[in-house]
Image (cartoon, rainbow, N blue to C red; front, side, top):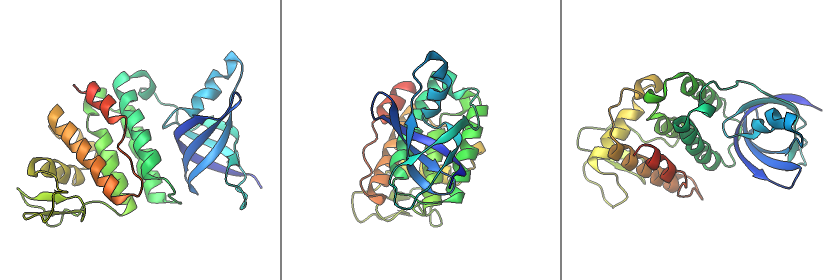
Length: 241
């Protein structure tokens, strides 16, 4: 039986000349793979754009218990972006966020809190000036960690403390080398305590962003099985150089 569904496209893999496989984080089922039929004519360009990363879509589908791959019908763009697709900087950030989420949410089931966080964050990102979005991707990473229940605990943070990447806590006396330095730890502690709106006021330079991003990548590699070294980090480092 067909039902209405909403989701965020995280990745698209070409299957053959006529179809792609979309990885979609859905509102009611979490991460789900769908078959997407490509348009062949020029007039189908708008339809094909629906498979772009972070596009929010609404569609009809039939969740059959025995299926591992699902079909999509009557697909439409739920919230057409005004700036993300037209800004090279925002597009690079979006590419990173989509790669991050496609790995962080692998196998994730229905998570209303996380879904709302992501849709609200993407709306903020689209409507906020490019110059104020340099910390957006890190805010998404930390907000996702919070929704997944693996966020670092800031209760015991104090200046000079270091983030224990294994235990997800801040300590003055680390017992191993899987720790962030005090400066990077201070950045992460501050971002964890900021709202998305407040992250634009965090005065980070390029070096701080690079170190923080690499540290967060390592954090997720320790807390999510099979989480990789994200390839698009190099793209972001070039964008903010």
